[in-house]
Length: 586
Image (cartoon, rainbow, N blue to C red; front, side):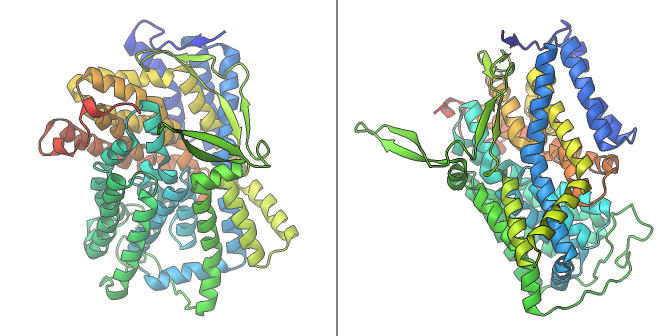
């Protein structure tokens, strides 16, 4: 029998909201203040989420436990599968000495740590966000930065800060595409609106990143390079999102930004080279020579090329796996557009021989379409689907795994050597996998029990300040779920309904959910665990959270202020791309 969500089970909005917040407080408090191990904090948060959902929100116990299992499966595939295979590739390159060569080649472009951050954490990370998303950019850039000699906190925290402005267009535009489906609003209008919010932060984040690492003195020393990186990313981001659509925004902008920075560094270098790898405020000497001078070997160009080939292979596989046409083919079918005589277009599925073998959908018994979302979270009652897709071939992690196998064979590993190294990698990341599974289980329990919707509704009571708090709702959604896509699914409908009730443009507020959400990416527990695993700093997740939390909160608040200006203050109001009356469903 279906179970209907209740958003105020205690008949007191304040008390219900406080109880709904308990799992978040337990999880983040355990990490940040009690200094619990990540897997212990995650399991504690999951236990509290189950208790609140069952005892306070009256979700049937069997349904709550099933939801937790569903979430844990999703945590292992696709998220954990990505982390495992990225670390596998990193271990392969490290043990063969190729990673040292790659490190030297980057350092020989510039030894300055600030410039390395711009190139790797911001621009290269944005490329991987656009191609794959779901933790891939933090895993890749964190591993590279730690290999370059950055301190674990710097490699982790700065990778998370850098992975913000590109997130709304991650995985070939998946968050915006999903937002359009959830809200019924025009996809290009949403893409354009997000593209009129985030470019402000694409200009800001590179400066913020370097300031967080080295302070204002550090920013001043490489101001021209930061400006080149920021402008060459923000301008394409605006143009592609407004005039092409969401799919290639990050990939195109990142490639242009990397190329512009590389060419600029051919003709310009800072007067002082900063070799410190520790975060400002976390070392005794924060000056230009804060770390001991490291000598980077100049290698033969053929060896440098060989060192880069494993990462080029990774890029090719991840980029290919991101395209819908490739993903469909790997899943066993293709889509064919049929145009009828009257001009009506329809899509049909054309199966391949392997259809049903590479993608298996399992409706979760006792959960699929058994949870009913009701107004005011949605316009009309909706039965929540719960289908686990075992897309073992088309998952991004599978592309990374295959790229690691190809790269490993290229580097001279035997099949047996690859197998042994893979077993060692599983042992290395075992606690991280447990943590990610528990984190996603917690997120799924809060979603299906309705506790996250209760938190969201609290933001909807803010009246004229809703543009600000609605943006912060997107931030909260990503902090809870670990995904801008999931946050858009969770709160996209609520944003449209609330904005229409308040006389605000629904396109503006739906886009604000995604734009505000990107700043929550750096504090979601899933991303923090990915960062700690990539930098081999497991057990210090609380340190990472404490470092990035205020950056996340302040940046999210700034996004909220931009949205407030776009809602009420000319000429910012002219940036709203579609009037409320024209934002219609397809």
